[in-house]
Length: 171
Image (cartoon, rainbow, N blue to C red):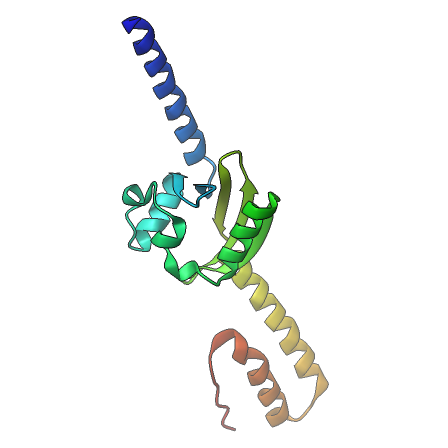
């Protein structure tokens, strides 16, 4: 019996190592939570993100997500995670990272144990889209008026939401 237990333990450890290797290779931060919102698994990318947020991922395993990150309360992250858990339907959303200056693409899927979230940093894509949209808008504004002061004012107003809280144009 002792030999069977050792073989079973070795097979279990091998399966766990294979699963960890697969999750670490997916190129996204992977988070798994049980139905009570306890953190049950994080891959390498998720662990790195949590460390960047000054959270020890090893200490967080077994704790409630809402205890580890109370600032998630009332955010789209909470809304979509809870909806996926409650309705048992996948969800996907794009949202700014609460802790870093990044845009995140978050996919949440129900699992037998709870939910899993796959998180990708899509900041470069979002910024490129915003810049393209701004350039298109500026092109439209330039073609609408020959008055330089009016055109610069319109361009400043168009750019304001993208880059600053206020702007001043002095001609």
